[in-house]
Amino acid sequence: MFRRTIVRTVHVVSRQQTAALAITRPTASHFAVRFNSTQPPSSTKAPLTPEQQAKREIHDRQDNLQRDWDAKVLTYDELLPKTESPSPDAYLIDVREPDEVIQGMIPSAVNLPLSVLGNSLHLSREAFKQKHGFDKPRKDQEITFYCRSGMRSTTASDVAKRNGFVKILNYKGSWLEWTDKQNQKKSA
Image (cartoon, rainbow, N blue to C red; front, side):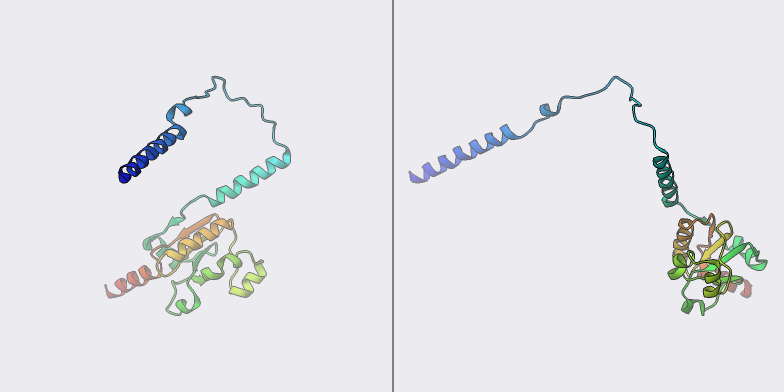
């Protein structure tokens, strides 16, 4: 008998809680009101002040620099002529670390490790030449980056782009492909 009373009480309480939940839970009818305007959007915004316009232009330029992009990728066949007759207006930059460069470099390349690239691009022309032993590239000069396997050269291309350089090329085959192709040439 006592057991029946407890079971009935539990049933009644659980029904009341379920009913209370159903009452307080919002339904789709609560959100049925829609406010649509038949009027075209008004252009009642005040025109931008010259300071605001300048800030917007700076912000837009920064956004353009930060957009995803890819530098043009060079193949071995496109890079080979650049190494055989280098141009003074173009740089081939090896972004590997000095201990990796000991293995060798592509002819006409200069070493500028990725670990110092960002800071070096901010140096003055004189400080850059003193630190690295070659002239600092101009922002409108052609720069081709390579590394060991193509990952760091892609990062270096991005760093150069963000620092205002515009003629950026990426030899993604990098040192591994170069040595492989050169060895094939010798054995043929």
